[in-house]
Image 1 (cartoon, helix red, strand yellow):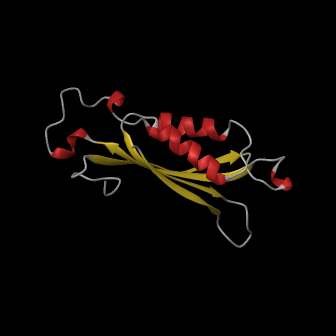
Image 2 (cartoon, rainbow, N blue to C red):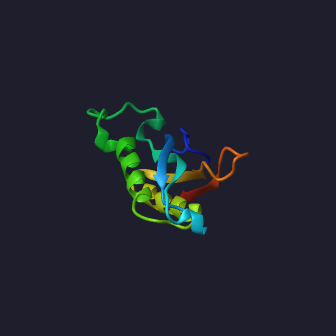
Image 3 (cartoon, rainbow, N blue to C red):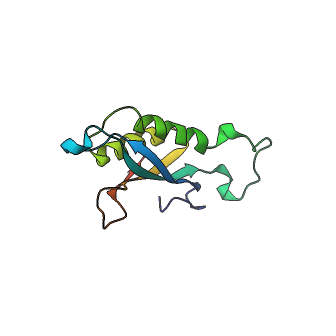
Length: 133
């Protein structure tokens, strides 16, 4: 699998950019009581039956046959809102597992950034990439 969008691999690239949420996250005492701003980005490699150049099937313009990014965003909001998490790595892993739970998703990259950690930096965070086995 070479990338997120690939005709050769039969993949389309579905993404969610700059989802800014309030998260209860952190290991330090000052992070325990209040929510912090996090930014989440997702890149999904999704099976694309039309990548081969074949005509799309009749009735192909249906939400049920693709990854619904509105539902994806709602799921991410639910994970972030589920309670305190110590590590951005843990949050990223939980989101990656949820994304791979969709039948058509073959690979996911999740980036989680804490936006207000350092006065002299835009963000600090982690990116994880996971592949369906």
